Image (cartoon, rainbow, N blue to C red; front, side):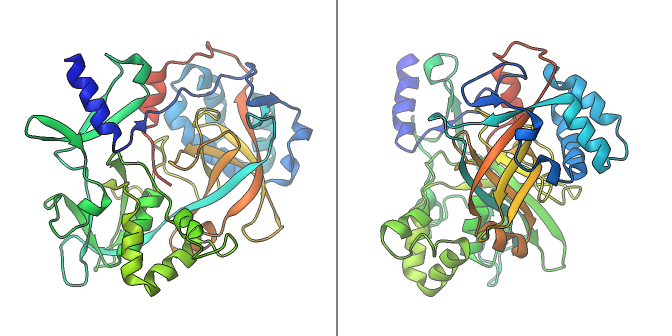
Length: 396
């Protein structure tokens, strides 16, 4: 059996391994290399923000983290504030948290801040001549293999594959899924008009489908095919199709539209493929990795190896394409395949095309301060299973 699982690992590795959610950062009071305790007046822009909106967003986080020991007291205090205002919100954060500046492994404190959004696509529940491109649910034949039991050293990996005869092989990549054979026929959730819009839905991980009758339905990341993500933007840069100054989601979309055959080949060069689930009508904004609906302009995607999901995070950066300051309190409620590193974050701009235009231009230098509860309540070596229950990884 051990040799069989090892074979599975080797074969599936050809398609890429998807890491399991990492253990979250230590609780307040525990110094680690990436976090440096500072005073409130060292948080750049702290007094410039209006933090009531961030408190409401944090209260949403508490629906997911209040049962976790180190967050119980601070979430109980947040729950007492029924009408958040600017003064009582600021008092709440200053009285219950310590600020920690996030630093990179080389000791620097600046990093990349990008933006993301929830796209809206025109779609249908049935295939028509107008709606020809499928959004797939999690396929019935996809295996998800954990290696924790027999190979602890590989326990952070989760492998995807399928059974062919008596062998487990890598799951279909993008080019195989999208070819004319349609190997996932019967697994469609919706059909949409535009393949480029569908591609960007995969990158964002969540979005809305506008049906012909005007109904809006939210779809959200369900899982991924196990193949590594390959950035088409990076490919365009390497091939000198665009310069860094030209690079944006809008320009990529324009280039693909103007070069339909080359554009189709370009999209196929990203083998990663995302599967979706339909959410109930109560969701007007997509849930992030924390499981609560994201809040436009206040939710942040982070790398949870440094910043714990659910924690308030103060961001100091600039608005996309300008030098105008953007300094405000956010809440870490999401993760993303490209959000790796200490000082690295993705700013959620909201739903629809207007949010997408701003998000696609955001590539700013920024600084982060994570707020952690003053009470040191638990051992810093937190249970990994507790974190895994809250974060199964989304793609942004």
